[in-house]
Length: 241
Image (tube, rainbow, N blue to C red; front, side, top):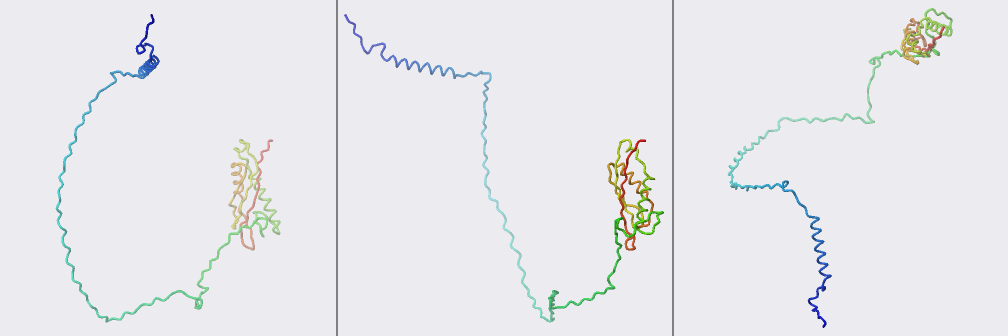
């Protein structure tokens, strides 16, 4: 005897559909469980916010009555006084002070009214070209060349006689040549001393030597006393005995 099955009561019918629905339900619960968060109740504070209603007062609108402005003062009547023209007024004519080429300028200048002031020229003539060189005390000669030679010899002798090697320069081992330029002015005095050397100590000593030169007879150019510059090298060299 064969058993007949009812197709509507078949267990395996729509099994794939039920499987898919169950799978989706499980996935949903798994996702929800992973994303579910919990908080401690101690960290939660419940505050009550009280909001009071702000009552707005209605300000009544009042119309202020301003007094009217005072009336303007009455204008004074205009009084016109008629003055008779008795005096004659002379008009002043302003003449132009500009001149043109056709006008001549008449001006007299007196020479005696001009003050002429003689100015002494401060001339400086080099030692090599001056007509008459400064004369050192004790120099005797017949011409300018002999006076020039005697001047140079006397100046060199004065340097040798007054030369003193500075102790500070000896201790520091300073030596070298100092170039000195000085001027014999129109009165025969030595001044405007300029020095250039390897050290200030040597320059100071060279200045002392030159400043002790005696007063001389000033040099002359065209018969008038003039300034005459002169250059002199002083060699500071220490020689051991």
